[in-house]
Image 1 (tube, helix red, strand yellow):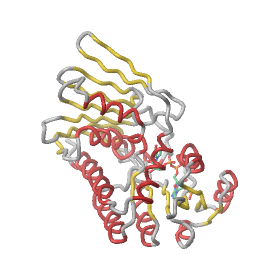
Image 2: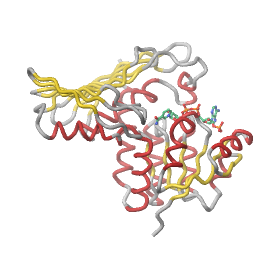
Image 3: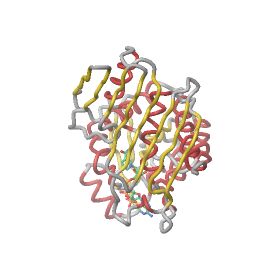
Length: 322
Ligand SMILES: NC(=O)c1ccc[n+]([C@@H]2O[C@H](COP(=O)([O-])OP(=O)(O)OC[C@H]3O[C@@H](n4cnc5c(N)ncnc54)[C@H](OP(=O)(O)O)[C@@H]3O)[C@@H](O)[C@H]2O)c1
């Protein structure tokens, strides 16, 4: 059986340069075959740096017969088109987050993947960091009692004015860019039966994108998730899980660098325990997981439903802002 997948990257994006390309090159299941750009020069520069073939024009990546997987770190408004094109060309797809910009697009891409039995996944790499499995184990041990609340925040100070995140047409906005992380984490801990119970977003009049906001969801067990996000905020990248007997705090939840030791605090009446866990590269772990799913598991339904769930909750927050 084939145990190495050949991957092509479309877009010489910052996130690819900063983390994903090096993680791909370190993966034992992936071979970085080629990288495509709108610019011939950019493709050549990246290809030289990462020792693969340059491709000029995204469509020229998809006609290649030697590519099994396409990684798409493009602007969010381009994710649907290039994911669909990649699937039609018979490739598995790893889309950067946000998977697409609305629920209807998510359904379109998932439909194309299901028709061809190909894997599509959204690159919420943080969920693969073992610190979250550690937290789940603490919860399952009963240490903090029954879960009452998940509260997650991801936000940061203003970005450069020309960043695509301030451009509505590119799929910008704080909900899609930052809010998706705590929503994904809430789903990890509270499950996939969340219902929206309120949302609020501040929309900047000039750019037309949401700059900060919050949303609340509830599951069938009456556990509540409070989510907050923003681009004009004091830096926060955390979550807190509040139980009937204690609480757990994760300080660097969503963007922990590969060298950083995660810190998890478990509090109970009269007792505070700080755990320092080993560092991990969650991009690497995400890629390993993606490859194992392609190589071993030919039933991708759980991945399809995960994409739809995430898009559904984002859509709720967007459409129900008071
Ligand atoms: N998982 C994570 O931790 C993480 C972190 C950061 C960002 N992201 C996601 O990754 C994606 C890319 O983010 P980024 O910050 O890396 O963005 P970026 O550096 O601006 O890259 C986006 C890429 O899109 C391509 N592109 C196509 N049409 C474009 C246009 N009209 N204008 C500008 N670029 C265009 C460009 O590739 P070429 O010029 O080579 O064609 C560009 O390199 C987004 O979906 C973002 O949310 C994920």
